Length: 214
Image (cartoon, rainbow, N blue to C red; front, top):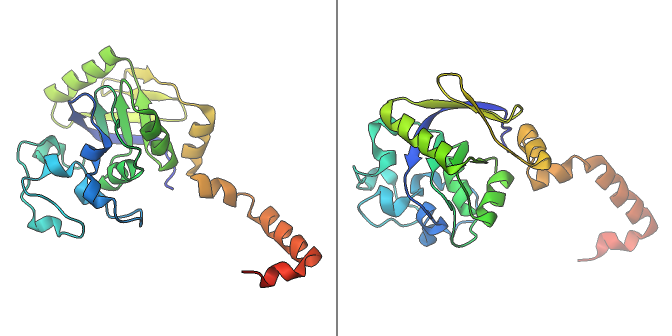
């Protein structure tokens, strides 16, 4: 998992309440468990005018010119500002996969669905919770200024606006530790790889028949 320390990125707005995970990555794309290739189908039903299916060449699709991520000013955006209860609905881990693989590194919203919120941290995506009126100000500022960027400093736990204003945010220490170091659940376990190997070797010495069990 890619570590998250300081990120500066173009902001894109998702100006809808209760954006659910089926909107983030529709159900027909959940067949794959490869954990890759979901970026082209992020917000698929809003992003394209034609129905999509797994494995389809994105170049063959008909983009919806009215959808925010298809607008030229938001190309290359890596920070998504959203409204309340983002990521509600079914508990599909594919949703943060799709957001991260599209290019987003951080989300800012007043609230998130619990399971989606947890899945973001496990997949290198930083979901920041800020008061609703502060998020509203960010929506207004990005609408007023083309190329509006935010800097997110995880170590200091601040979102820095273009004028230098620093907005503090909370994050649990363990989640912060994992993101700063790029540790997903497997990465956390592999920190103890030497101890695991030593345990397995000792166990086989004491119970050699285990090496031949299926």
